[in-house]
Image 1 (cartoon, one colour):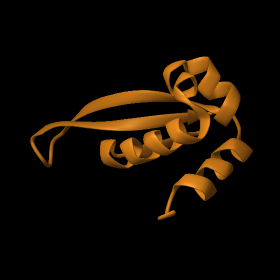
Image 2 (cartoon, helix red, strand yellow):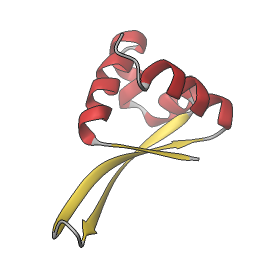
Image 3 (spheres, one colour):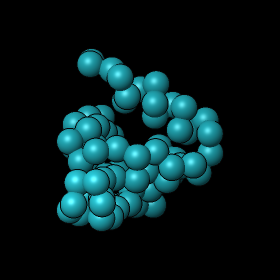
Image 4 (cartoon, one colour):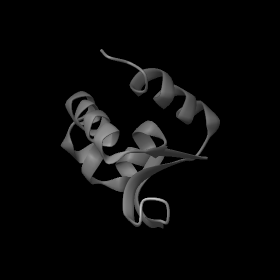
Length: 79
C-alpha cells in the first residue's frame, strides 16, 4: 500500500515524527519501518500536462493498520 504526499506535506509530517520519535527513526529506514510501519521513497516523473518534472514522496506501508494509524494521526490534522 502506497500513500502519495507532496514534498510540502511530507516536510510537515517529517518534522512532527522527528519531534515525537527522535532523529534516528527518520534517518534510519529500518527503524522507521519497525516504529511506524512504512518506508519513504522520493519519486520523480514527467508531467506532460505541466511540461516539467514533478517530485513527490511515496510512503510504502507494510500493512493496513499502520497506514490507517498514520492517516488518522498525521493527515488532515492541524494539531
